[in-house]
Amino acid sequence: MDKSKTDLFINSERMKDDFEVLAEFGATGEGGVHRPTFSPAHLKARDWFRDQAHAAGFEVKSDGAGNQSAILYCGPEPGSKTLLLGSHLDSVPNGGRFDGALGIVAAMESLRIVKENHIKLPFNLEVIDFTDEEGTLVGLLGSSALSGSLARETLHNPRGGREALQEGLNAAGITEDSILSARRDPHGLTGYLELHIEQGSRLLNARASIGVVTVVNGIGSYRFTFVGRADHAGTTTLTDRLDAAQGACSLALSVRRLALVGFPGSTVNVGNMIFSPGAFNIVPERVQTWVEYRSSNSKVLNQLEASLLERARAEARRFSLELEIESGGKHEPSPMSEAVQACIIEAAEKLSLKHLPLASGAGHDAQSLAGICPAGMIFVPSEGGASHSPREFTHWEDCQNGANVLLRTVLNMGDHDSHPS
Ligand code: HGY
Ligand code: MN
Ligand code: MN
Image 1 (tube, rainbow, N blue to C red):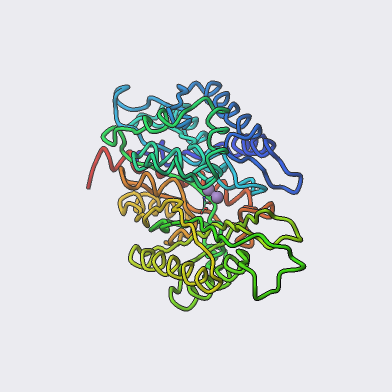
Image 2: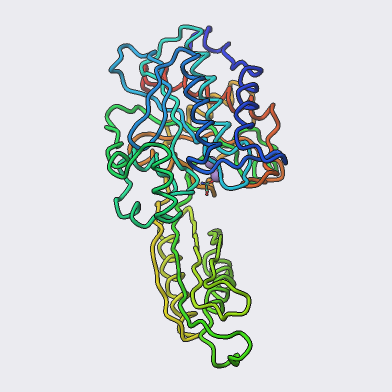
């Protein structure tokens, strides 16, 4: 890489200003953000993204899935391939201000530096804000639409429910058909890069500044609805009941044991339960519960899925309940590109930053992109490993390191693209 590029660093103050303004959209007052997909706060953050892109002189686009892009034509011609630098502006309910947002402001800042220094690359650069990464509506909605891996039936049985999906689409002015039309021709992409907080504590424990992601864990989920019979809570004896809560709650306890004992290293999570009729003096007739399962190994993910289904059926039988099963979708584990990992490592070493290879326990848009182009992820440490909570925090120096590694990785990919080894 010629001298001029090895001196390039992001403008940390400018990126920090962006980050702090962005953190105001949906700020919860405890340092977190509440910015579920297409909520008023999220729509404001999306407007902010477009304003920033216009102000920086980038072309602004959005696709049928609501993915928003800021494009810098720094390649040999407008039709050159594109390197995507992405993440997401939506958050989990009452989440943290770094998850997704850091990747967006670092990507925007990297494009500004390339533009201001008149750097020419063998490809164009595009910052992309993916729709609904977190799954308020579907999960990885925008990135799976862009990669062509989103099935229409996933929209018919979305994790967040049909009503929420319809409301969200109306708010954003998109439709099911426009979402499914958002597929991008993979031949136009040279790769995908994402800077993200680790959301765990392995970097902290290893005193490493940079995580080089090797694989993004596979994720699957099911909605189980246990169906019993509503009865009077005071006059129905405990042995006469068809109590849907017994099935759902015993499943929540048993899946933890099942994963711990049978599938070490995997995770399962029961994130919510909805009781109906939901009154304290009625035996619950229906209890709906979402179970999510994850593993970095495809075989384990599939075996865990089968065991969870069998366990749910066993709990329903145990309490003489009916059981409705609906899949919430599944994403296989996604290995990250070795070549992109090498460019990340080269960038970290040139910046004398200790780096560590690690699997991502969290899902990311990168797992959608990995199916259609070389994808890579850069992690920075999360204080206390906290995330999906207002406790989420990353020191600014770590954010700055991550953004500089992102910028240098882009330049390294440019070099390797021009002089493939
Ligand atoms: O749930 C996840 O792993 C990601 O934060 N969406
Ligand atoms: Mn995220
Ligand atoms: Mn997240």
